[in-house]
Length: 312
Image (cartoon, rainbow, N blue to C red):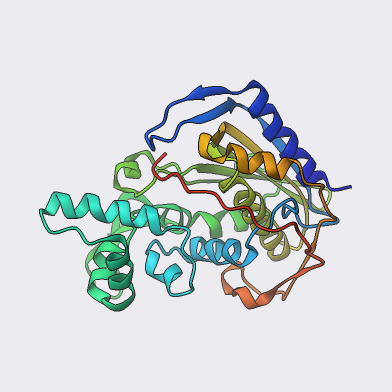
């Protein structure tokens, strides 16, 4: 039985039937519920929705981008991944207006990111978003850099730390990675929507629970399900454990008003058999590329387009 699409469809129906209308700073408006949860068993299949095609390559490239610690949109653009473009462009416009310089059009901005290295360094960076928080959380403490003899700020690699703790202290209740760094929020293009995740080891299985403060059910959540399930699989592999359950817990989970017709179309579709995922085993979670992954028997319904609401 396809437990992924069925839970997703049930949540969509719940929001449409029982959600409340709320304004938001994107100006779109949304139908919202609070405090919902879905649970996905990874032991037999990979939780990629079948009632519409989810672009798995984009899911993988974004996750690997996070894991690399990178926060510059150029890396994704160079791989023909454009899911962060609108946030990057909005962030650039804010900087340009503060600096009192002419604002490029969206098309001009993307082209300049591709071709102008100095411009991409300054205006392609999204601030201390996920990759920065996962791999180099700042501590406000300093140490001497052994290579330059200058002071440098101490950082914490949360991903390496949580992997070490899973291996050496699997019963810990502190197997947590947080992206919600309060002192950095105002420096980010977008404050983290998926704010923290926690691991739990039981009988040779590794489980993961994500808390997501704000969730766009139609466009974002299918990505999030697949991304954190993939992260769970990779960390379980490195820790010599089996991937168990991914639990997806929501704060505000919503359907934007301009997605209502699209999600109704998706709800009307019959779920298909879930795919499985095969991947080349690597010594470290940081060694993977997209070419290491292969989806098996993924035959979803066609994609359904929706307009991204930027800024929530």
